[in-house]
Length: 599
Image (cartoon, rainbow, N blue to C red; front, side, top):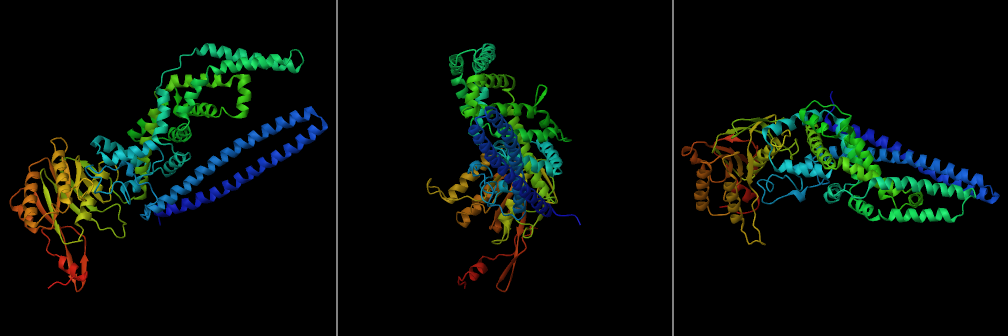
């Protein structure tokens, strides 16, 4: 029997957890080795000093230094591997949580929420228990921002088709996706402002200092300083000469103090992200792809004849050394070998050759980050369908369409087929029968379809359209706006959005609910007549049964409903969409159940 995706995630969680335990044990052993090595060196040093054996002092120090650096490098490698392994454990734990619809621990994306957006307010795109929490597996600032954009702005058909093809391919590459995410999580995420510092440095004017002169000075002065130290140790020159050379070197290095300080200030908070970026790019470079979109993104990770991962390795190494210039060992070697000049020449030449590439690479990885996220969502929901983008644009058809934020055990799915310019589908129904949930179901799946993601359905066809919703209108005390006026403003926004370019698909819940029955009926009738003449189509839910008579007046207006049944003191809902007007109402029964006496 084939294992479910939840079982796959549970098995991988256990597997990576065991591997992490072994790596942690290794890391502890290396820590112990380093301490032991230091103790042995300290004892040897004391004995050598006590015996006056200069050769033993020198050799023990050099031996300690070499062994310590080897252990340090190996330990750092193990710690990095352990960090990635812990990330893989967390990734699979997160997938299990998402499968159980336990979303509270995930980022809500509230910074991207726009109250006046055509559908943010109503469709749970961002916030608590939102689509963003369900889909977002990005590990980069750029990926997170781009995912928010894709959730907020509909793509063209060609883009949707390209994204679907890429997502389908990536959904089959579980190891690649999770390793990509784990590498992206390996460093503390700098915010967009910190990474912008890197870009500002790249876009700043090139240094005008004569690099050839500095190169000659570095070679000549370093050789002269080392030579003077050697000659002094042999007794050929006085100690004053090496000291003089050191002061000359310091004076030369001082001319680079401000340029290097400026570089380190601009890059200090963003440069660590280069390591994870390099590892993510390396994964892409080593992968083969079939979809045109993935092939194009991979081909963009190059500069002339060098791979982006190699160039980022160079840049990361250079900036690492520049950020560690206050290190005691660096300072000692710097005044002798003029290391600042060496790294200054390296960084300026890297910048001259690659200044146009770094931001592009971040953007490419950001786009891959989003595609990996959607592919992870697709993999976790193998029963979901990829929608077809069709003509005419005023069209939505779905088979077994459900809400992706409702657990499948409780989810009720519906079929429907609705199309036609100016079409209005009137939905009537008793209280709590599922009208609002149905509208949100259609809306949120439309957003998924138009960003290139699979939808919670057995099949779906949808035109190139713009989604608009008016459902959760509320009063605003600060702005002195009543809920009724807020709804009117929202409806005005809908009218203004409709144009002759891309049709608008609207969902209006409990139309004009904040006014009396007569005004509501007149206003709703007028609104439906106006919408019937425009480049739009959509759903309007209402308790006003009389509005259903408009099917006799206007072409393209249809009636659908949600019904309930009352048995004794129990009200039963099937949450199924049925043709025609609602035949059952339950407001008085609900009031009775709440203890309100109805005569």
